[in-house]
Length: 341
Image 1 (spheres, rainbow, N blue to C red):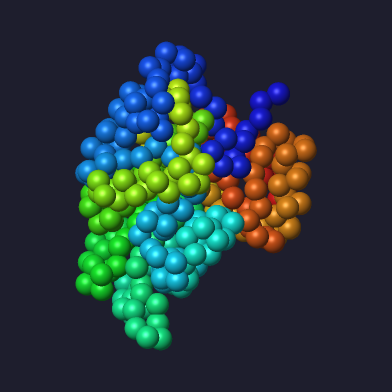
Image 2 (image 1 turned 180 degrees about the horizontal axis):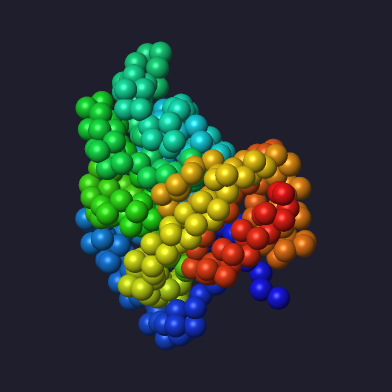
């Protein structure tokens, strides 16, 4: 029986066409920088983002760890959203790996307030740490996959630069932001000193992210990647999937966004379950439920073959992706109506 898996856009499986490209990949040893397919992926990523260089990494979390470690010294202050991936879902890496002090700002629907960031930027003194880095997440996961407008990114970047701080863009789903907004990935990257994007989320690859920045930044990043165990040797097999995805799986993200809107729109007038964001911008739908969310998710899985995750006591998340078609949307709508009647 068909299973509709809405837990995340990380659950996608490589298509047959992607598998064929992976099996035919030309490989070398990436630690020696002689894997031709990895090198090609890094060049493509650098061109897409307008940066000098790029580095293939195992995950977005690894890329964020590397960026923090390179941009900030131990004891420096790093500003990030209180609901950001780096704050909530990276197992305390700012403290343990980057060894930085975090200060968290509040965002409204995922969009930060530049004035708040400006007030918290400060230089190193006898008493205070230097603010060395500001991290933005676009799209913003826990805000419902919302897009930070390009103008806000520009304001934050220019504000940070005035105080000598770098900006890192956690663009795990930056292609979703690009497709939804009509702005290019390069336009967003223009307002960041470094940017990472995930291949293993909306783009449908089995593994990997790419970190982009200046030549000097990537030279240092390569050392940190090695320190974290990220030297992946014949990684061209994985990089080939990334190259395939960048050529074939970007424009189709619009289908994921359309399906997310259909899913949310089916419950606008339902008393027992409500979308947190009525008109989701990208591929995430958060629902508030009268019943405990864990109970709803369990019923959906056990009785309707629909998988999703609770994110709070009365909130669950459903994510559309490459393996979710229109039939899966209908399955989810039907199942939610049955459970939350």
